[in-house]
Image (cartoon, rainbow, N blue to C red; front, side, top):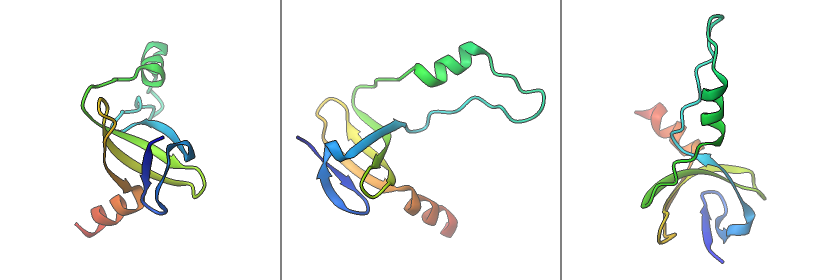
Length: 96
């Protein structure tokens, strides 16, 4: 069992969390009436994962409190480097 840090509740059993995706993944642009996204581009966005070795940034949700946050960890050693709530990211960007 591994402990993940929920920014709201603190360290909790990893089984209380849901993986929501890799951070920084860019969704295909669908803005505008002329924008069309090919099936290949959608498929790559939905099903392709980078699977990097080393430091990775992922989006996770703590299911009991519904907190969504950015988790930074090492994909080989599984060491958790840190967790940042998206509420804190928005606050820091607004005050900058």
